[in-house]
Image 1: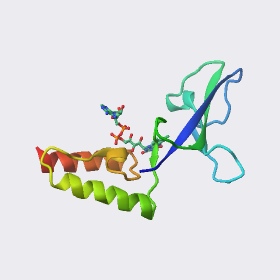
Image 2: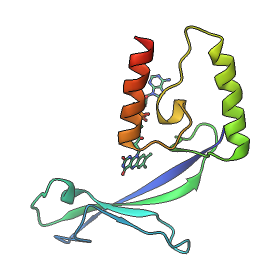
Image 3: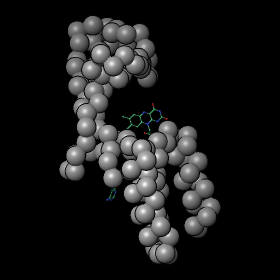
Image 4: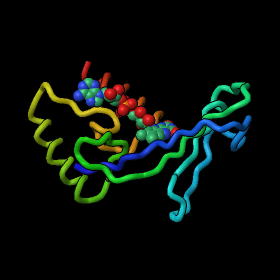
Length: 121
Ligand SMILES: Cc1cc2nc3c(=O)[nH]c(=O)nc-3n(C[C@H](O)[C@H](O)[C@H](O)COP(=O)(O)OP(=O)(O)OC[C@H]3O[C@@H](n4cnc5c(N)ncnc54)[C@H](O)[C@@H]3O)c2cc1C
């Protein structure tokens, strides 16, 4: 199955504050990054410099770290075939964002883990 990957470009700046917020999203396709993280704002750190990370989408190939499933028709159909094979086995369970091949955020992945624990344990 196919995935999307990311390149993280991290920079330390001689600035106290870069963007005033932990996360700023960019949705314009002309901009090569999808968001900028300014780490100090997650915990209100006080320091004269700041560290920022640009998240730049990039295509995935085997051997690279997968970050997002590609939930199109072709890949979902292939996932379904694996799920059907696994359904015949008592010792194989798919879980989580990559295992379940679903675009979960944290709340949804925790909910799915709790559901799986209830079903399996
Ligand atoms: C770039 C990015 C940004 C995100 N931003 C947000 C956000 O802002 N808000 C939000 O709610 N969610 C966000 N998410 C989604 C959230 O991070 C995921 O939904 C969540 O982490 C998925 O949890 P998981 O347990 O399924 O997988 P993971 O957190 O990926 O955990 C899987 C674990 O399995 C380990 N593993 C993999 N293969 C093996 C193996 N063969 N043997 C042993 N261990 C293995 C991995 O090392 C990893 O520790 C983001 C995800 C990404 C990738």
